[in-house]
Length: 392
Image 1 (cartoon, one colour):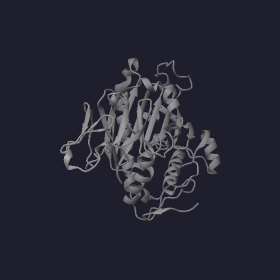
Image 2: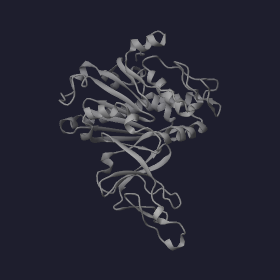
Image 3: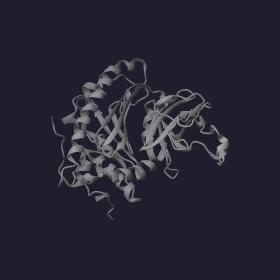
Image 4: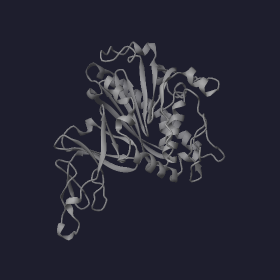
């Protein structure tokens, strides 16, 4: 396989069990390439339907470092645009809110209807441009349960192909009826890929997490690898399984596990029998992210668990933040050439890095693998002894 070097960093596919070089996780040049070769060509989660319930509701978001805005029109259609005024390039929206019937640029008061058309520009007589051809630049949008995804690339595959099995799983869990329960936002000094990789592996769970380790069993899990995503079915331990109410819309099997997912590049969706949560890792700089964590449920009696879930999610996130920032610092050690990953508990990290490498090198080789894989299958396939999770 040909090598692909950028800023002295080999971004070609790592050998089995190996990881990308440390510089891939802090080089500004690699970060800029991540934005153009990965985020600008991917379906990226940008907002949730509860953010845009009413006409005029909007959310300012990012796809990589590209600002976008999601808005519900007065025709009830949810649209996405580059969050850029075509006059001088200022962002036209910040945060979340309701714009009424127009999005207005705060710099020179150019205004746009919620379908993106230019409807107002002071001192038009001074311009020679054809105003009928000027408006907000649209982006592709798709929804999955409560989630809204955006894409900047007209040539990217359809969202249904990108998201793999997630839409079907979301539908089985009543995704169109999920209510937003609570949210957290953190800023963390870490490269976006490091945080994603933390969300893809179960090797650290017994060491770092108390509540999560009590909740699920990692070694009996099943691993699934898709073209632009992956997921783990981790079985709920018996003591906790008895606490989950019977849910008639789910099979007995679906009530027995948690689906820890990943949609490339930066979304970690987690479907549990009575709830749905996600982590979205928004890149800010080579060693800085904004971590958005939200949790949903079906309301009613299930809302009684929200206080516990709220504390558990924040506790788990804070524990993860503590270890990933140590990884980020450690990767700067002079002479360290890169790490390794285990055959089963960290196998989805290898899958993710193959997707990263494919995006950078332009390789067309598929990374999808049909079927469910157990610990025995993946460790035998790797030709290495079984790697067990450490115990705290």
